Amino acid sequence: MMTNTNPILFPPKIWLYLGISALGGLLALAQPLAGVVVFSVGFVGVIAVSPPVGIGLYILLAPFPLGIIFHHHKFYVSDLMAIMLAIWLLFRSWREGGIRSAWHTFMVKEYRNPLILVLGLSVLSLAATLSRIGTTVKIFEYIEFFVVIVALIRYTTFNAPAVRNFYVKVLAFTVSLVTLDGLYQFMFQLGPAVNIVDVHHVRAVAFFGQPNVFGAFNDMTFPLLLALIVFGSEKLPKRWLTAALVIEALGVVISYSRGSWVADAAAVFFMGLVVWGTKGRAVLGKFALYGIAIPIAMFAVTMGLGKIDLSHTTIASAYHKNTLERLRTSVTAIFHPSSHFDTNQRLLIWKSAFEAIKSHPWLGVGLGNFHLFIAAHPPKGLAAVPPMAHNFYLEWGADLGIGGIIAGLWYQWTWLKSIWGLMKQRAQALSGETYAWVLGGFGTFVAFIVHNWVDFMIDHGVIVPLLLALGIVAAIATEIRAEKA
Image 1 (tube, one colour):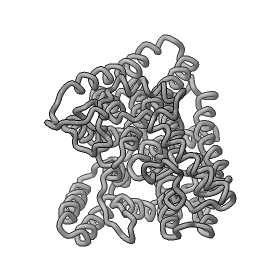
Image 2 (spheres, helix red, strand yellow):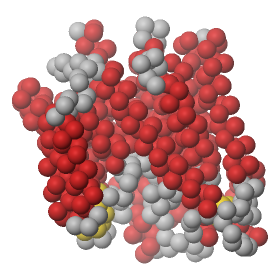
Image 3 (tube, one colour):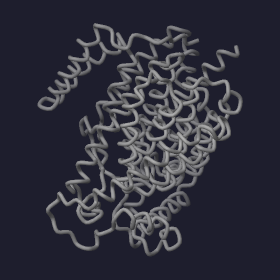
Image 4 (cartoon, helix red, strand yellow):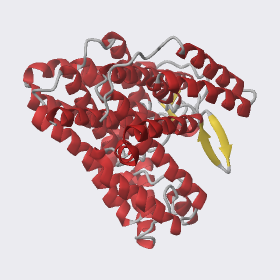
């Protein structure tokens, strides 16, 4: 059984290892291979003296495109960090109880069965994949995300509130940093013409390359910070987190991602219902102030920023759509999809995904390979080949066959089921800190599920808020089981 307590996160020795890692990162700008070697030496030292700081560095660096291109695939420095952290956790769990302990550590109980199905289907898809190398890389990515990182967060946050608080502070800082870079892009129109909005601006993408992914990184973080600010421990720097919450709300808006807008609206709505049902109406006012008033204020701020021209360019009237018009067309697109370019393209992509499922119903086209299928069989009217199916279930259905859709529904159900079990039996007994984490985890799950009806957000960096929520909710569930034992 895990017996973690709140550790000393920054023992004196760690500063030497952090310095070596930073030196390696700088060296990598000129000599990538030598820089990676130096960084790895420092990172091994960091793990040896404070594994949570190593995980914190993973959270910090995962969204940034630091890495190398090998055989047409991007390998991130965070992948290397995950491998080293996995080796540490394997050694630690094996020493505690052999193979059985290692299995239960990595395959987190709350999400185990559907995850086994997903990984099993992914391996089977290699028999029919359109790209064996691409599918193999994706399988390792899924293991990194949903097995290794979730297990690491669960293991290190078990009975360790200080570690949880450390992780969320790193996440808030990272997302804020990415969002401020996105704001810079937005204000100075630093992006392709296809992303231009409100005449003088551009939809923010930061380091992700897509506005929807930038929006998702913010929309999955917003509910977590919201819950921790309203209900979390006083040991958290709530003023600083409130500033981060404002930045995240602005990031959602300037992404101009309808999926992100709806995702956070749904997350706040359902979180509000949970708060009402478990805490009563008395605390809804404060929750609404942070969860509703701040996003509305950020829409107003964005409309004001839209009047400022720092681009010094002349843009065709086709790119004139402002924030209010984007909101209006978000509604009209539902009733008149054929007259809206974005919605029309989504429908064509979804139709292609259905064709992939029909032609490859059992094994799919290989995990991560739907983009190859649609490139080979483009539907009439498709403007550009998309990187994914723009729908979680259709992506897994096309990639893994019908079983992928079943696995996706089952997997997401286990997330919500874990929250329901905690809230149903323990809502009134949960401490403020624990309640805040469970509520925030629920909001992040809702944001991911809702947004992924129109996008597919399983990729480096953007997935980190979800992994953090999965790991911490599982850690809390483990704590409660231990209390009952």
